[in-house]
Length: 178
Image 1 (cartoon, rainbow, N blue to C red):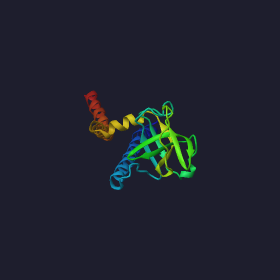
Image 2 (spheres, rainbow, N blue to C red):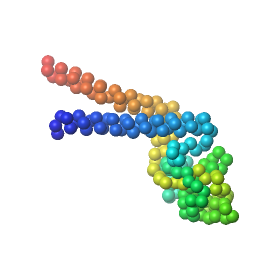
Image 3 (cartoon, rainbow, N blue to C red):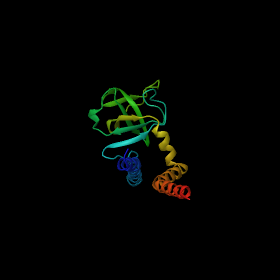
Image 4 (spheres, rainbow, N blue to C red):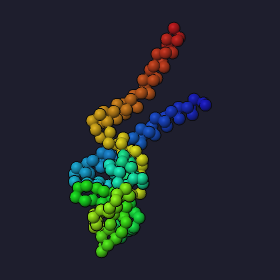
């Protein structure tokens, strides 16, 4: 591989993940500020929101530690069989719609024996579009002080690691040349 392609590949391997990480940090920062300012329990970006699943009520479809991406939609678009998230007080539940009675929805976790109480359409916060397995475990860790310190260390190592490697290589070349 020629030198120019090698440098381009190295730059891509460094800056693409760094850009992605930066984007995730900006989105997370926005969601945190939005939640603090508006007191909205489910802050969204363009109608989408990530939620971390904490219980096994939707196993085997969704496991604890999975992240679900929800999208808000009009109440009349929800139908039986959809997996949706709804707000009950300050708690968010993600369950499957199993019925509709008098303009109210009946939801039930796939792993639960009984259905939830009926849910008013205005309680819905979004329909599940995507499930990302096990990512929530890392997200919960990164929200803790040890996780934040690890993330900061990782970013610093990522930024300065290349320079350190170059200096080590130069030092080795000088030693080999002596």
